[in-house]
Amino acid sequence: MSDPSIKIVLKNVSKHFGKVRALDAVDITFAPGTLTTLLGPSGCGKTTLLRLVSGLEPASSGEIWFGDDNVTQLSATRRDVGMVFQSYALFPHMTVAQNVGYGLRVVKTPPDEIRRRVHEVLEMVAMDGFQRRYPDELSGGQQQRVAVARAMVLRPKVLLFDEPLSNIDSKLRRSMRDDIRRLQQASGITSIYVTHDQAEALAVSDEIIIMRSGAIEQQGPPQALYHRPETTFVANFIGESNVVDAELKGAGEDRQIVFGEAVVDVTADMPLTNRTGPVKLSLRPEVLEIKPMGDSASSQDLRGVVVQRAYMGPVIEYSIKTTVGELFTRVPAYAVQFTENDEIRVHIRPEDIIIIPENDRDHV
Ligand SMILES: Nc1ncnc2c1ncn2[C@@H]1O[C@H](COP(=O)(O)OP(=O)(O)OP(=O)(O)O)[C@@H](O)[C@H]1O
Ligand SMILES: [Mg+2]
Image 1 (cartoon, rainbow, N blue to C red):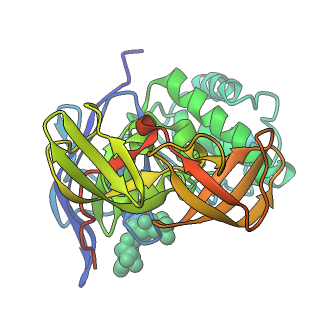
Image 2: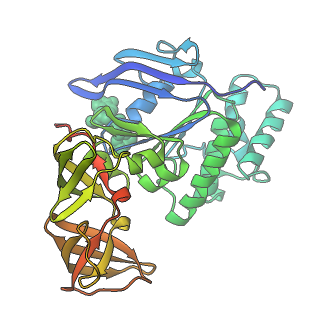
Image 3: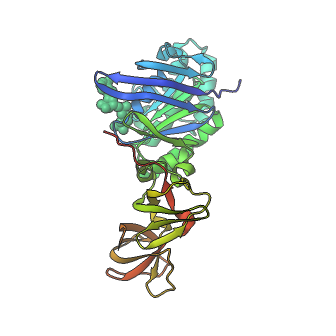
């Protein structure tokens, strides 16, 4: 088999449904062989983007390229795309083998080859031996794996997943998402994956695209989105975040971030270090340390009062009232514990401070 990995490029793609701009002049490159997740609130255009890539829906304007081929005008059947949806849509009156072999029968593949390829792909999804079962004799996770096998058996250039795990209970989701990741990596098929679940997105993706109102808010590897969100929208969407107001002061070597009574020296690797003036910071709940007031205080600390405490097993969550607003923190249960109304200090290591480069764009 030749290398199946192709690049997918969207050039200035828009999609309008009457007055609704479901996608607005989107430019994206999906690198060959990668799995990219589209993540964003309901109605932001994720399914629309998948449907345009699949060819089920024509673009209003712009171009879609698979490798060196401009596929913008090609119908879905000629684009060589495999799809897995939330409702697995297996044919109920067909066995597993018939479901998986269906697409091969349509293109008149010889029966021997169908049997061989169905076997091969069922083996990949750990469903070999289930050939004669009907969908209603399978668990949800097994049905989903058959749906993945059915999409892969045609050796498509592109795999599209639209919330494939949302009908599956949370324990099984974790192993299913690992299965999908493993299969995708083994096949090298360029894949686009839609989910509402940011933990799932962080776990399966090479790249994540955060979408908002039909546009791309930010694209990057999971760690980059988590540690370098460019907008407060992204900071809040990936993981949890305390967004606080701060001020950048000073010049040259001598520059500080001031928030409340805390003053922290700016380091070279922080973004936006040439600017002065108001800025927003993202402080992740797990990087805030809570210390007794009496401990050697540092000018980098914020004073606070515990307003709420929740025991969560391995961690304890505290809400802390400070001069920059209420901060949500999550600390290991083995750390010193506090109770409501305790006066404490919140310590933040400078390297954990995330400066959000952009003033939040005003979206309507
Ligand atoms: N066939 C259609 N006709 C009219 N409007 C549509 C159509 N399909 C989608 N839309 C609109 O386009 C926008 C984007 O819809 P889309 O289904 O892509 O969102 P989504 O990000 O997949 O949301 P969800 O997370 O709820 O699945 C929405 O405002 C939706 O109402
Ligand atoms: Mg959708």
